[in-house]
Amino acid sequence: MMLHVPQVLTREEARALRRRLDDSDWVDGRATVGPQGAQVKRNRQLAEHGALGRELGAIVLKALERHPLFFPAALPLRIAPPLFNRYEDGGHYGSHIDGSVRRSFDGGHVRTDVSCTLALSEPEDYDGGELVVEDTYGTHEVKLPAGDLILYPSTSLHQVLPVTRGARVSSFFWVQSMIRHAWQRTMLFDLDQNIQKLRERIGDGPELVGLAGHYHNLLREWAET
Image (cartoon, rainbow, N blue to C red; front, side):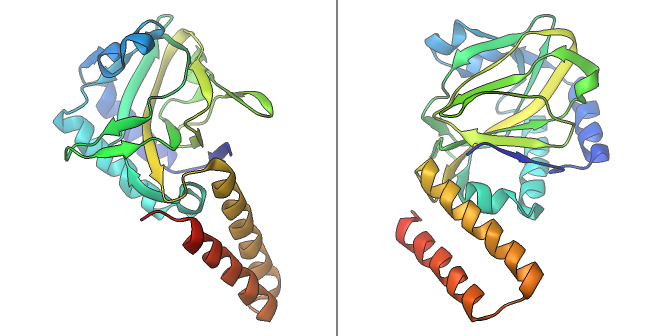
């Protein structure tokens, strides 16, 4: 499942983060990938373990907690600390699949089930820079307003096209889901969203209670905790 999650941050919150990032020091983005990724990655990143990255990452995590779509879509068990990157002057990231495991700040590990990109630049502020994701249903180009997020399975082949004008600034991170398999997450998300829509239309009756019970029984059957 590939899902656009709107307004994780308000425009004002996204601009505030962007101002902090514009005044910061950036390092070569190849420092955080292996030899294969380094061959196709040309961008800059905020230092992975710096104080500013941790502070801004905490803001992103807090925003995710309050968003009504993020939890049912990702069903997070663990979230890798958010990172921040910048593409400009032809910066790009060629076709790749994200590494399967990320190390967290506490020394533990996060299995990368879901990849997330949170836009911090407005689409009219730069040319190029589309996120291109390939899946079973074809190739999808994504260029989001500041504050919006895209999530998709980390098993997907994807790339960031060259930025030819301006700067594309984003936060990115990975989720280890309670539900390992993407098809199961998709089924649970669709079921949850239809239950919510029915509840708004007809309220809680026996049939809706039954559907909610099926949702939770499937989650209980499949979840890793």
